[in-house]
Length: 68
Image (tube, rainbow, N blue to C red; front, side, top):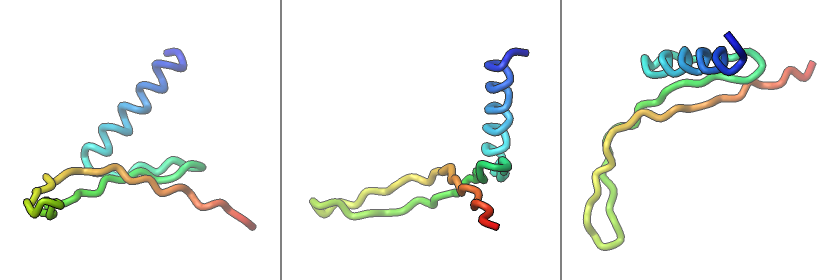
């Protein structure tokens, strides 16, 4: 397995975990997680109401630097 294949394999594992709403922590980098956004109405400038469909959003929280 070359570097490109191993990179693709790691990315596919991360994708699979995120699709199952699992957190993925990478030491020295941070944590990836999935947040579910509910359906929500919003009013447009012309007065019409738009419904934003529910969706899942990937969040990233960088690891804090150790300043000791």
